[in-house]
Amino acid sequence: MTELVVEVTGRRHDGAGARLRYDIVDTDGLARLSAYGAAIATERLLGLAGGPPVGPGLYNPESVLDPARVVARIEELGARVRRTGQRL
Image 1 (tube, rainbow, N blue to C red):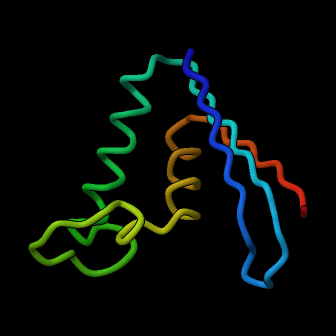
Image 2: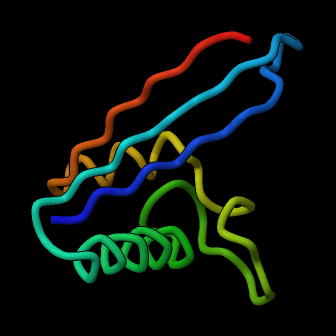
């Protein structure tokens, strides 16, 4: 089983402070969750999901991947994602 916790503290679009926590759980090992990430990125780069193919270049994942689409796709593939958050 793999359990990942991602915590982010910062400002929301409306200027309010917020703290978000994502718990990502997969019943298989870390290798499968890593493979999901590679597959999701490859789908995006080839233009199979989320827009046209990405041109040549060096990209950070956050510049080409839509977080909401990634979460939805990870859930489709079998991982559980739970989001909790609070305004500060």
